[in-house]
Image (cartoon, rainbow, N blue to C red; front, side, top):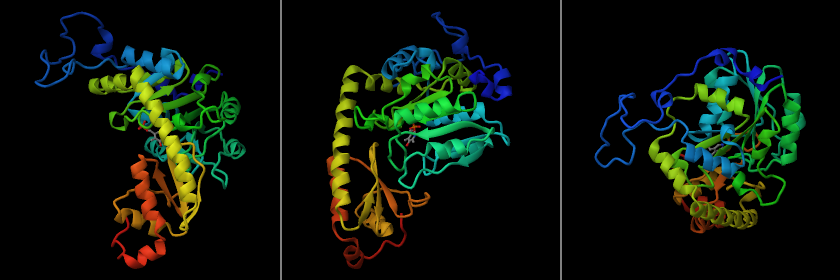
Length: 369
Ligand SMILES: *Cc1c(COP(=O)(O)O)cnc(C)c1O
């Protein structure tokens, strides 16, 4: 069975939109795309022209970075666009489904619902690690995409590479395994939870999502990359809007991905890992804290004896953290991003004061954030 047999038949049959930029490369008098002949006052180089749909220099650099071929890679507006394209290409409304392991990243279910696909849930274990057997037991013929977030958000647990490869093998011919590696740069080096990016050459049903939003410090620039079998990439390109990548964003990404930029990224990731260890230990020793979930990402999910009091105390001090209490099994938890050492000190300063004493001393905010 070919992985393209899993694609929606109408998408397989569809002719892609052919943009002016795709049809006519080269030439110096460009009169085919109804663009302005003049750049805007104050506008950057090339801003008056539609961008290359997949700029060759960016694609080449990312292929090198992630260890794949250029035709195995699709650059888009964050990983979110990759998730959305996959669901639209593989899930027929009212018929197909995606399989997720909650608590996990919310966009898998959101994209599925927008498409009219069902969302089947195979919960994580009680310790918030991925349960492969539960996941495989929940598989039905309707499931076209299985999403695994590694490391997971909001829990922070890494997923061993061996487990992911086992899953890819088990799903072959039945469904695509989509591994969201948004936080993989933060995993402990040489540990078991490293990237499976280069394994796309071994499994035609394996898709890996990478992003510049977290470790690369470019959340505002919106660049994410989908790595997969070249046929899958070509299929997704067909349904992608014609000019997804704004010229200034491509320029910003190329700057970040320079040798100097990569060095800076590695230094900062190391600093975040160090702060993660410090925060993990310190938070776990505070009286109001019940537990800190082990994390391979740039955040810690912290269980409190009174999460509401902690949230309000932090809020009153101007510290905004993520309320994750709506997730099953995390009714007492808040997710705290690892910030700069100064940011992290703000968190500790608030939480070192016993929360009960603080609640008595300070009027409660009228509305919890
Ligand atoms: C932050 C995050 C992303 C990144 O999304 P972008 O669209 O690339 O910014 C992807 N997946 C997970 C699980 C995340 O937490």
